[in-house]
Image (cartoon, rainbow over all chains, first blue to last red):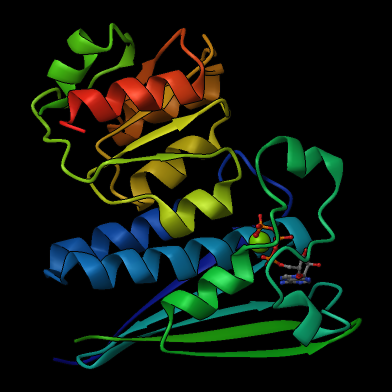
Amino acid sequence: MESLRLTFQVAGGDLTHAGEASSQVKQTLRKMGYDSDTIRRVSVCMYEGEINMVIHANGGTATVDVGLDDITITLADVGPGIPDVEQAMQAGFTTAGDQVRDLGFGAGMGLPNMKKYSDEMNIESTVGVGTTVTMVVRIP
Amino acid sequence: MTVQELVSQLELTVFHLEDGGRAVTGGGYCGDLLSWVMGKAPADGVWMTIMSNVNVAAVAALTDLACVILTESVAPDDPLLRKAELQGINLLGSSLSTYECAVKLSAALGG
Ligand SMILES: Nc1ncnc2c1ncn2[C@@H]1O[C@H](COP(=O)(O)OP(=O)(O)OP(=O)(O)O)[C@@H](O)[C@H]1O
Ligand SMILES: [Mg+2]
């Protein structure tokens, strides 16, 4: 099987449509016959990353490379960047404002979830330039 | 136990019932912070929450929940209701508190 690449433009600030790219990826993986645990893990990683781009980075691009052995999710934005990645990775750390908190976001659990549900995770971030998060979910 | 049986036993309001025959095998999860739910809600389970905005549908769909129960007589806002219909989410309601609802759910699922 050749690897399949899915690409999505994720709009910033629009929380009514947030999560649609993740839903599409899930549907595609289901049609391709991936096991439910792998689909769940990809869904969590992708959704959290997608929402972060919407809320914190004014949108960005999500790319999903579906291979035979693993699925790689890349979320690239040209947002404000993360000044202290180690701090951002801590459970409970958030800079989310009241508006998004009222909707149920801002627990500071997105990045920890991404770490927990992926096999590999890397964050490249430069303040004023942007952030690229890469996650690999290996297929059992 | 199916979602339809749960509706009867817990006297739930039906906002949208896509698949009443769906089996509830994953237990339950209570919470209003979406990332916690995303990380912990069990597949084929029941999520009890007071959140009523459209993002509830995305979380329910991505975690493969059997159904969502909005507790405390909370009603879904219009975008959530539309998304539940569109994505085929079983969206229910209860006048009970989240705690009371969870207790009843636990009894219905056999402790
Ligand atoms: N793409 C990004 N660009 C800029 N900052 C980011 C980005 N992703 C995360 N952050 C920063 O890292 C913090 C922690 O992110 P995390 O996803 O763990 O929690 P959250 O988004 O604040 O809340 P939750 O995900 O629980 O709803 C954010 O509050 C934000 O300051
Ligand atoms: Mg987040």
